[in-house]
Image (cartoon, rainbow, N blue to C red; front, side, top):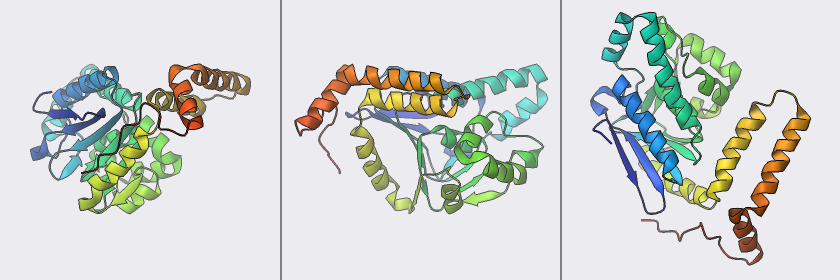
Length: 266
């Protein structure tokens, strides 16, 4: 990792990826997007069990930084399109990581920062955090993050908050589905510990298939026979897999499966 990001992994395979631009509220620029994309490639290869995504300092991410926005405004439409495709590809990699992902929302998140949260499976936020899809106030649209945000919060809420650009408090973000849980700032890590412990009880291959299953079901276009065939094939393959056999035998033997490590809370 460079100075823009830090990546640490504990012995259980729990990785913490930290946006490290606190002076600009962890705002995006081209370099940070490239580093995030490379980090997600690495995490997908390394057999990470759980990914925690967070920000250094007091903010999660303020979206695009001013210098990057200035350079985009001066660029051609073709240059802007290429730049946006790189951002979209980075978000897609986060959304499709095989391991469970948790946004540790330590502070405010706007624009692309909301996009990062929407790409994560779960999100724990400080009750002091604020959120906003403020692009319309700049004469823009939240285009590259829209597929992930709309899927997360639904069309009803997207229509309101993308059109008004208003700020949301954490309780509203929980209500609309962007955030999973809100906690006092000093309880974020304790809450994360409990959430991670739950995730580590699941088989890693099974969890990757669950994420595929959710994408399959939500993208289903009406061919129920095809969907039934694909879901049946998935469960059949998992039942006879090494992980599935270990999980079933562990349950019958009343023991923990091999992938569950002892709890070691500090």
